[in-house]
Image (cartoon, helix red, strand yellow):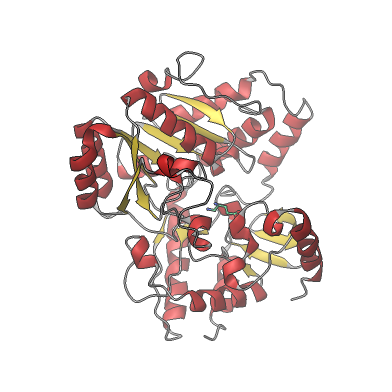
Length: 424
Ligand code: HOZ
């Protein structure tokens, strides 16, 4: 596949932008590749600047559940753009989008729009600290909650991909308040509460961990976290930046029937534009300025284009057949696993809703330590082979495969066909 133009862009970008990219994982560092520069996205496909087309299983790391350039979302953005890009004043779509989100997730009685998942988690933590008057936080090893200082301890996503366990620039005293437990380990979480219970403001968790590949919560794990938080007066924060409107329209909390105190959103909620949100119980959210004393702000928050894109997306998703998508995704992931198993390599293929992840290891993956047992060389071989065949998987074993409502049977067939030609 000729990717010379991408390479030219990357060479130039590398002189102007750190690592040639504006977010680390897309640099394709640990899969022995350089990034493709994209010219266009349409449905389930991306086209690069050299004119190659790819079936896209990255989907902008989650937002494009309706596929790229969905006509109704595009029309909503165009219509909004014609009325101005930003006002720095409230607009009607902010209210309507807030109404849609609060109606979909009963635990979210009130919410604040921000511009990214990072902003959402950072602000939710500040609020939890203010509400409880405590400083400490429990997060789970390998979970990723954006790049605010407090969360950059044993994080997933790019932090794991690039093996930067503690990022320079984060003051030691800040992460000293971040307590760590392995994902799915209720006992160690309980132990942290036993030792620091009266100082813990919040537990933050990805209800399905999707930044260390794809790790599903064991039965009772999320319920156990809920009970521990309630018992010790800490807030339970569900980071639904990835799972929100993907695991189900009502997110992971709807699917698993857990009521968190605060929820963070990103990705799908902005329909591909930069949007995040955090919300929860009214009594907590009313602490946010200007109704309360917890400061949080943003010039572009509630941006009219972003609100229009998010609103158009949620309106379509409201009547979308999530069950059918899950069924198609499971069948596809299962066939992919069978093909790879037939190649004689160790393979695990967790899947839930429209997400899947190949781990090249023998045992099921239940926490970050398990992900370390996967064979990185096999992953790289598979990634490169698939990309050469026109199939784009996330360029890191710590990210999740995403499927959209517009991936067709032909897309799956072509992908499985490509996979059947890999040799390790
Ligand atoms: N952190 C995101 C993935 N979970 C974005 C990665 C990127 O674009 O580099």
